[in-house]
Image (cartoon, rainbow over all chains, first blue to last red; front, side, top):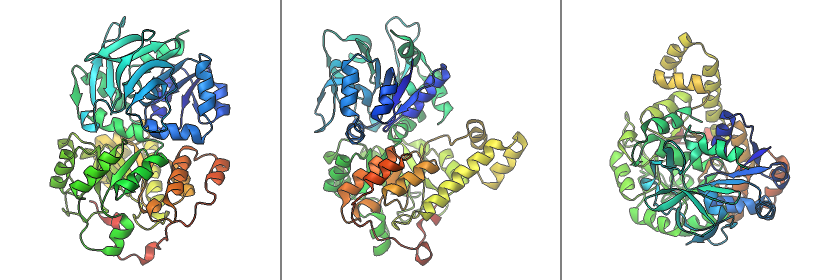
Length: 188
Length: 306
């Protein structure tokens, strides 16, 4: 099994570090040929507008859509969640959302950096709370019937799954708690 | 990358908190691999966002114009900053003078996403920088060497940018500063525990931060590069040298055709190790900004900071 981390921009290095801690060597993905080599993919936090443009510039938009349609397991954190959502409310023109998870999200829904925060997140079925770090995070405004909500914060879903796609509005890569990465690397 | 980022998350997280070191450094982590562009109008901010900038720096004059016009350079008009905040959805940064904590308080009240305590503006205090721990908003500061970087981090800076020489379009000082910072990180990583005391004394940096550099092999916060970047090749050069993202000041909007140059520099920051892609995106960008020789400068902005 080969795990890739989309390395166009953002916190891809921290995701690689998290996988290294659990003994998984993740590959950086910047081109279509690199994408073809991996079995599952992380789309990291960063700026979703910049990543959308870099997906186009590097010829990754169509190949990524094909892989997602083919059921490749994918983990999207923050900007990654936005890119995997079905709808971006008040979105930037030309912003990609691949529709892997049937949800509508609002970019920077919690506000500017002054509103960025950390908070414990209770994940269904996990023994202790996960340290959630929310940086200019998106708010999930609605989720379809096929979306499994695994954690909520103040009434909004923050960790969800649909099929082989997992998305979080917080940044598991900013903590040293590897449960999200371990779960993603081993899920069927 | 800083392992202590994570340990803070695990130890302290019992309730919802804003402005923690992890939350402040977190935004810098999200900007990695990206380009932060100086803009002076909402229209320029839109050009930057359309090109794929990860953030904009809102200021009244780009460094090349500050250098040309002379006089005292201050914090920008809040109305101008607010106009840029309304124009774009990406983070908006703004500059305060070195030591001018009242300007920083005003910028925090304006809800900017990052404050740059910047040598490009005229310093307000010749001995003290801002106590950045006192703020919820994160700060970036410039540095020419590792000691200066660690002093700024000890004051609460959550991101360091190598200074270069702003407004010159000349990359030579950026390279000098990056090589100095990263070279000393490499040497400290090889030092034994007794040598670290002397390192702390020689570079005038707090011993705990010197120890952290020795243990992790990197700065405790992200290291970006600024000052003199004006081509995709410049961005690729500093990224290969170890910068984790780039600031472009005068280099975009003082060039002949800003939009394609901005887009090309964004693509260069991502594809910095691929010369074939760099060759393709460097084609036909028009004239870059006119550069200046460092020896001919009346004012060296990089010398500001203590």
